[in-house]
Image (cartoon, rainbow, N blue to C red; front, side):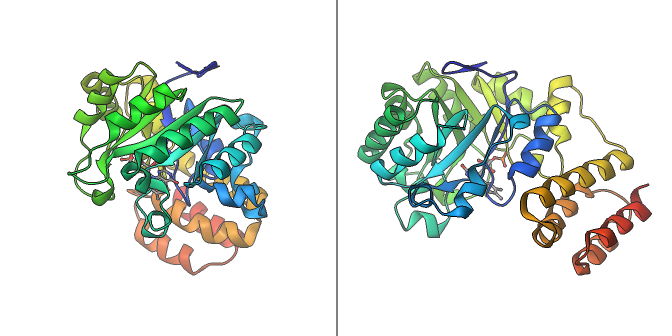
Length: 312
Ligand SMILES: Cc1cc2nc3c(=O)[nH]c(=O)nc-3n(C[C@H](O)[C@H](O)[C@H](O)COP(=O)(O)O)c2cc1C
């Protein structure tokens, strides 16, 4: 599929997830076949004022391309400035209009933008003008059941030159609860001619197929079901749910670990890998006991020993 002038190998994407989709994990998802990967959301203000943490979050490695860097904020000029800088090395700039977190919403950022269409208009117009790479938007169904804005936002995005729009079929007030509404994704698809990416509750080959058939969306985006399960991209590409061996799980954890150490150093990697490993070993015999031991350990070598004892 194409997003703007950019050719994407396939239409199954890794969703942006704060605390999860850093470069270490994105590289793994790419290896297993994700067509496009997204960074965690990064502050446009941080980028504007150039803090080092933001630089680490927005860096893109060659082997994960094409990659989208997602920015959040609500000041059109600051967003445009961040986009201009990031467009020097990212393949796509994605604008976050869906984050429900109170600390984000209270600054009028993320999903709060769904209540301020005038601002959406300004932000998309300025960011598209400032960016030399395609700009996409990721939003939700709306703020709450009284404010369902996805279709209006999609039309505005199209008018302003946004190259694709991803819709998570929940309102802000739903956070991650309840069921994603796929009808709203179908509504958006009918309303615009830019590519529409469907998101929410895709967990396997069957739900991936159903999302495309039901909504007629052009691409799909997978979030939670990819955590500890990068094989989901291979499964969807091959049309059959792939079950990795314990040895393959071990190999992927080790690779993920090494990627993370390279990115953030061993101290941080050991701590951050705990949550990833917890997901990777879901369903493996003895997982509860492994998690308990791994969470008490502060050395990578010891973690690897526990994994070796149980997985190979
Ligand atoms: C831990 C976590 C972090 C997330 N962080 C972001 C984010 O930074 N930006 C964003 O647009 N969405 C974020 N999301 C939302 C996901 O991208 C996705 O829209 C949502 O999880 C629904 O898709 P799913 O049912 O496939 O998980 C996050 C979700 C989770 C679970």
